Image (cartoon, rainbow, N blue to C red; front, side, top):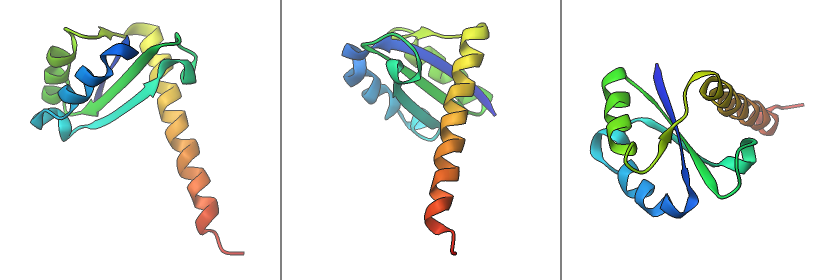
Length: 100
């Protein structure tokens, strides 16, 4: 699965929410996090989009006017944080459903 990661000012959250409702983009996996919660700058947001390559290219064209793409080593490190957070949440939910 392909992915892309963007950073944008928190003040643009309303614009972001509208863009994420776009038909093709709304069918992709989307995660929006306060940047400070994953070690980034305060007052900014990170947006992770995962999906097929054509959808990711479309996401990049839609988000580029309002956000900055995070790539390279920084992007890989943030992607890992997002995935680790997801795995930790999943394993935590298992505790609710484990019988003793």
